[in-house]
Image 1: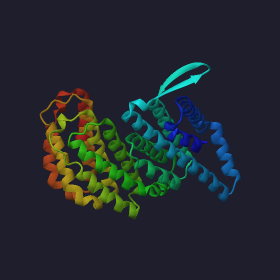
Image 2: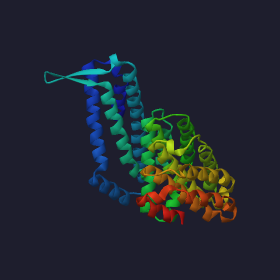
Image 3: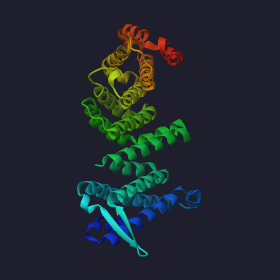
Amino acid sequence: QIIEYANSFETSGNMTNNAAGVCVSLLSLFLSFVHETLESRVFHRQIVHFIEATNDDEQSTAQALFLELSEQLLRLLAAAAAATHQAEEAPGFSVYEIVVCGQTFTLTRKMLADRILSLGLNILDSLQRLLDAPTFVTILQELIGHNDIIIRQKSLEILAHRLQSLNLSKSRNQASIEASLHLDLVGNLRDTVVSTMPKIWKGLRDSSAIGLAQTALLCIDILAANLGKDRQGREMLGSTLADIVGCLNFEGNALCFSDEILNLLGSSFLCCGTICSSLSSGALAQLAPLMKTFVRILAGFSDNFVDDQCKVLLIRSTLSTIAVVVSELPSFSHPYFESIVISSLKLPIWDNIDSFGILERDIT
């Protein structure tokens, strides 16, 4: 059914306004039904009963059907994204007039495309809970590489949800095994960070792009926590750490950055800390540039009153990551102790009672 609707959606420019509008409106209703079904507890119980009552071959058939549904949704998402861009570039082709029971309704093509895009992504978010790890990775690799930034952002949010639930619902050994199946995604996530952060330092102020990089860092952080004992994972994390540290080469004082960029920096530092914790001595090559960046951040806040929550969080992220790095590489961190202590003692926390207690513990 989705294939038929996708075909109609892709060729709606050759249809009458009424026929195309009715088709896309019906698609919206149909997708709402699919999403409600996938979220239904009754459906979930039926899936569990099916798995318990069938053999491995039949269970593979169920996964194949979920994969087919995912592939059809990917095609539909591509068509919806293309329709959105087409409506923005050609305003004259962006309005439907639908006649229902003698009444005329005017709908914009972009409004309908955005609605379908949102529903399709929500369905994928619900569907991922029913997919096994290999199938999920196959779908996510295509989504992360999509041209539309909204689809890329949502796909990373879906990945983050899955990885977080993985940590909460399974033992560390089980989490590590499944995380290793997501290893191929680390390269995609790293490419997202590397392609976005340098543009931000050069003046890009697109909230979607900043959010995309931050979500990618969160996913890398979660994977790093579970891949530290995997040989192939350690190799991948080592090169990823080098790329992230390379992206921290920004100009200017962090005090001048927006809250979004401060949060992005904090996420970058925490991600580096998690990778260093997983790699231990394997992170030694990145120790010097990383510690110099931390000292620079702390020095930038010295003698400046900090009353902004995002700035306080960045200081906390910096100090927390320093603590992790020093604990993992104590013998190699001593050249930076003096600079860190001096910069930390100069932090303007003494004038901010609310931040003092928290930051004092971090410094200690």
